[in-house]
Length: 179
Image (tube, rainbow, N blue to C red):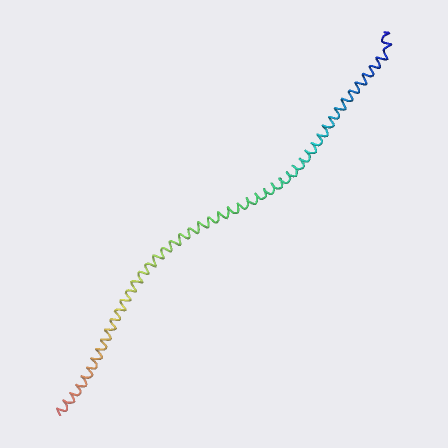
C-alpha cells in the first residue's frame, strides 16, 4: 500500500486530468451535437418557414379556388335554371309548331277545297260566259233581224200607206166615174 499512498496524488491528478479530458471531450462532443442539432433546428425552422409560406400561398390559392368554385357552382346553377327555362320554352315551341303544322295542314286542305271550288266556279263562269257570248251573238243576230224586219215593216207600212192612198184615189176616181 505504500506504493499507492505515494502515488495517490499522481493517480488523483491523472484521474482528475482524465476526468477533465473526458468532461472536455464530452463537452466538445455535446457542443458539436448541439451545433448539429441547432443547425438542424435552424434548417428545420427555415424549412418550416418555407412550408408555412407555401401553406399560406396554398391557402390563398385554395380560398381563390374555393371562391372560383363557388362562382362556377352559381354559374352552373344559373345555367341549370336557364337550361330548364329553355327546355320548357323548347317544349312549348315544339307544341306550338305541332299546332301550327296541324293548322297548316288544315289550311292547305281548305285551300285545296277552295281551289277545287274556284276551278268549278271558273268552269261554270267560262261556260256561262260562253253562253252569254252566244246569247249576245244571238241577240245581235236577232237585233239585226229585228232591224231588217222593222225596215221591212217600215217599207211595208210605207207601201201600205201608198197603196191606201192609191186606193183612196182609185175609190175617188171610181166614185167620180160612177157619178
